[in-house]
Image 1 (spheres, rainbow, N blue to C red):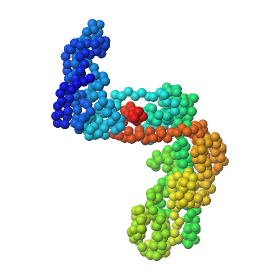
Image 2 (image 1 turned 90 degrees about the vertical axis):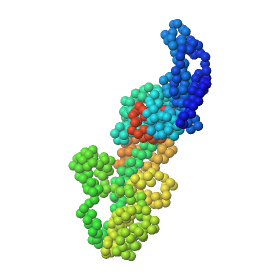
Image 3 (image 1 turned 60 degrees about the horizontal axis):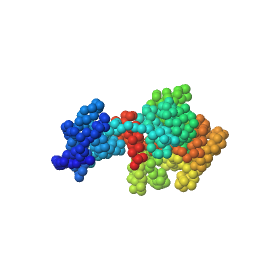
Image 4 (image 1 turned 90 degrees about the horizontal axis):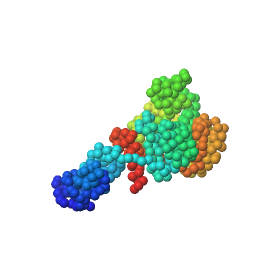
Length: 521
């Protein structure tokens, strides 16, 4: 017990003189009780604020003689282990609050909060509190989820391991190598279920580290891989579908030998994207690899893989964010009435009607429609308001989930391409397998894909065969890596709060302790 012997209030700070009320004290070495006082000194300790004032405790620490002749310690200082640790300048309850602030907000943001609460603590002090904590990895988990997270995206990665039952981060690993995962799992023999990313080193590490554990592939990545296959198919077929939609107009222009000056100039001077596409095709035909082409042209390997199978560059995504196509009929009739109307006049007119785009988008649209400054108007080209990325999402949805305009778009595209129609049916069956937890039908679905003529879906099916049992478990069991993705999002937030001070050991402690704090509260 303590008693307050004096109280002062100076410049927003309360100073309390405090001392223990006990008449004797046990020796910390031998435990014998002593009542003979030797001397005393004062310790200045910060405590929680009160009434908007900082609080400082002036603690009287007494020294005692040890009467035990066999004890090596002759003089000792009384201990206050339940309130004030040795050599510490914060009370235990203040240190606990500061640690929680550090875990929730980090150093810089935590310092600002402490200043608001009238607590004197720097960002370095908060970080030191985290460093001082000992992290104990829970050893009772039976189901875990494994996924990677980026120190710096595209350069180096780590691994997050999450307890799927307790919904908390168990540990962070400094890389995503198979040997590291294997060593960690070897020390956790009680784990029986591992939900993991489809990254091949993870599959190898889990197989070697926990050979008896049941492996479950991440369902979100399965859907993403299937969506990527559909995206490649749509990018390959897009120019063919657009050509079918424009066939009548193209034939009309060829018969009339009509060509606008803008179109003639475009043939003579192809756009930079067309030139890039041509260079990619030429280098690929010459036997160059995708890495070499990407390095030479300074583009990504994904772009190289995409351009190899295309005849024209893919449509830019920016145009789909406007509502320009809703005014196509008005623009066509307006130009037909007045061939000399300027683009600026048209822009002002449709803006007053609700157009939300810019001038350049309108100019490009009118150029493609064959608008001339003088002379007659050419036949209007039908507009194609879809991109491969947008249509990929629509193809993966059921008919009852589609809006009327989206359903018409999907049906129109499927009518023009038997491959897309077949890919949609296969994607629907895979989605139904996942929704109905019918993993036993996977082999039949893969056989059906192999009989199709869709190279992209065959590639997806081949990838499933390389991780077959884990995929079957994903389509059968309720376990998922979804909550692991959520924990990684939280990890990213914590890492960005740390303003470049997120070394691995500090980040690991903060993430694990942060997760344990929320788990307890």
